[in-house]
View 1 (cartoon, helix red, strand yellow):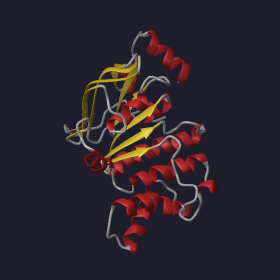
View 2: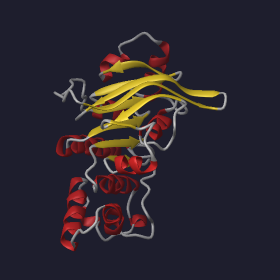
View 3: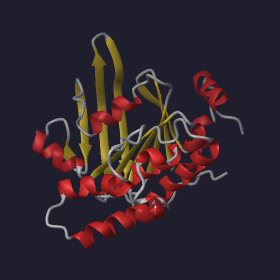
Length: 258
């Protein structure tokens, strides 16, 4: 099993900077002063149990949810103070891979991949669109599925096509929401390898939201563990779990066995 316990050389450039982030829903304070940064070219895994605020965090990053307080800067842009037009432009640079793949069932794979490109990039020729679709499908190893419908694909294939569609606009940052949820172990390994390939071939900076420790170990250059509304542990996978903290140990033993 691959273990990315040794961090690769990364740029000193920070592409996401979060400071003292607070988010509450009524009396339920979900994020309680979160600090987090993402460096260019880095795979950062955010770990935590269900309901700890992992998905809330990435919604704040892309401006889908406004925090109660705190600072969120993405690619040099202050997300909290951005207007709708500014956020729409920023989202073109940030790819969001949804947990359920979010494919349009009435469209072929080709049409699903064309959709974000045709919608957001004008004056492309048919040849340019075809080339972009084939390149994205080649990146995920599914060129043969180009004319299939989503209903004809396995869960793992749909997940890979969802990632391919996210890659169509060549985002600088990738956000993965539970990328291995509901998949068998072999398909999980395929998805983990794909996340690493996107990092290496596209140079993407990524945040991977998960509670899957195998995924965290295989793709994370750095791991941040969310407990009680704050990041309690950060470092490589091995560094995060080298602790006597019972909460961390319980999470490890419940989810993962060497």
